[in-house]
Image (cartoon, rainbow, N blue to C red; front, side, top):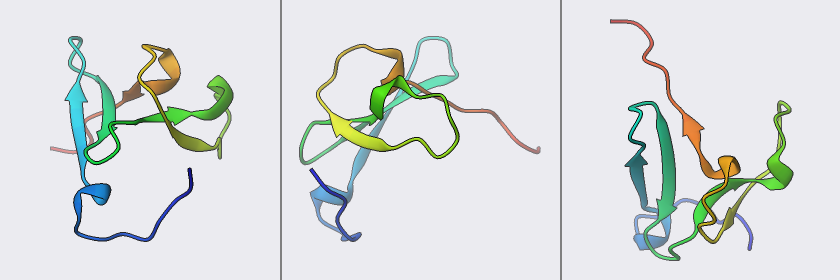
Length: 69
C-alpha cells in the first residue's frame, strides 16, 4: 500500500468511528475497508502510519482532545 494524492472519490473518504469512552477513535477507509494503523505499535513522534486490516489493537486507536471553547 502507498499514499495517493487527495481526490474526491471514495478512496479519499474515511469513516470516523467513536469509541465507547468518548475519546478514542478509529478511522476506516471507505473504499478499501482498511484502518489507520501505527506501524509497529510505535509511540514515538513521527511514527509511520499505514493502512491495515482491523485487528482490535491499540495501534489502531487514536485519541482526541477538545481544544478551546
